[in-house]
Image (cartoon, rainbow, N blue to C red; front, side, top):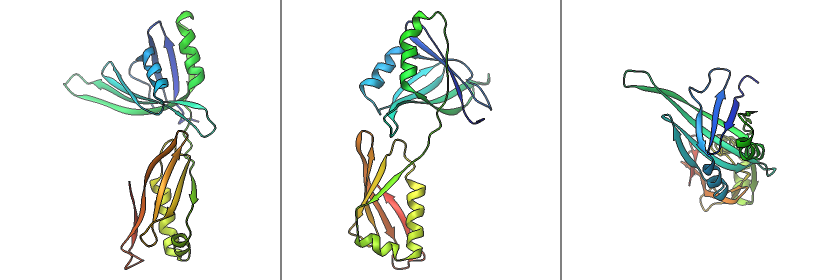
Length: 210
């Protein structure tokens, strides 16, 4: 479990103060977030809210996992000056269960310096593919080389956060597919998985167009 990040949260009437501690390093300072930023997240779920503090930046997004649990994603960009007019830093992503975080934020101002701690939730990339096609799929599955090429592009490309499933349909081009992404909030990105260079199957390659 050494790859997990510990998040510590304190709060007052207007601000939430967040620190992170991982096996390799800890945040250079506490990051202050206005309580009003949480209201923005709740009003527009799945959209990012950008904020900054002490020269560092954070991108916040409220999303859902397939079982309906709300997750607060925070992407930190920690920056420090080295005294020679130069800046160095690193990026860090953490994921928190939103309901207990929200409950603490709501009660924290009356708790006289209380601290809430939570290990970041690891992201499990799970994808479900549905093939609602027949002709092109039969042609691809009938060729071992094309099966391998298609499986490889699906595994490598569709690493999108919050995706519940990818639905594929026959495309007008041979061995190719139109796709639709579905998230907990409905249909997402649409595009096509196209096989290029079909004149030479051994050298042909799939690419994704959106």
